[in-house]
Image 1 (spheres, rainbow, N blue to C red):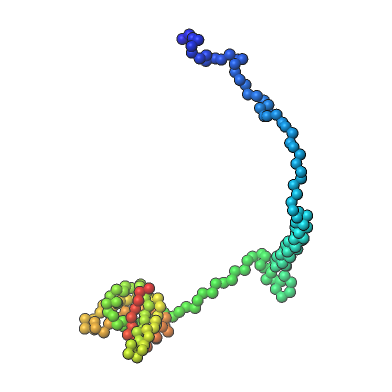
Image 2: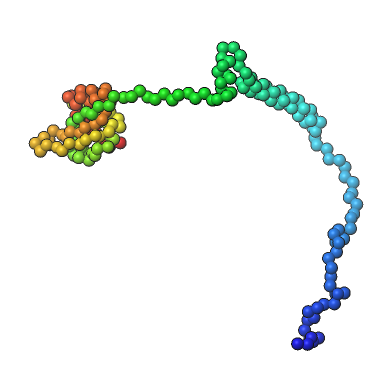
Length: 192
C-alpha cells in the first residue's frame, strides 16, 4: 500500500527526532546564595561544658560495670579454684530433687448422698468434705483435695438410704483422716 500525505509517516525524518540532552544541561542556572548571620544557640557554651562533665561520669560508670563483670568472670582464687575452672569448661548441672514418694492407698469412703456418687466414674478427681453438725455450730472442712476415684461399687438395694460407697486413691495419712471423720460427720464430694 502506498504512503499518502494524509496518513502519519511511519519513518520520521532524522532531523525531526528529539534526542535526550546530556546530564546536567536541563538544570536551571545557578544563582548566588545570600549571606546569613551565623545561628547562635542560647547557652551553647554551657551545654558543651555540661556534656563534657557528664561524659566523664558516664565513662567512670562504664568502667566500674566492666570491672565488676571482669571480676565476676575472672579466675577465682582461694577456697574454690577447682570449681571455677570446672565452670569454664563444662556447666555444672544441679540434679533436680524429686519429691519424696507418697505411699498411696485405696480407701473406701461412704458418701452421704448416694445420687452424687452415681455421677462419679473411675478416674475422676474429687474433693472430700466433712459436714459438721449444724446444731453444734459445726463448720464444713475439706479432708482431701483432688483425690482420684478408683472404683464406684454398685449400691446395695437395702442400704440406699445410708449413702453410697466410693473407693478413693489417697495418701496413707489422708486415709486415716477420712476414716476418722466418717465416724463423726457426714461426708460429701465435689468434682474437681
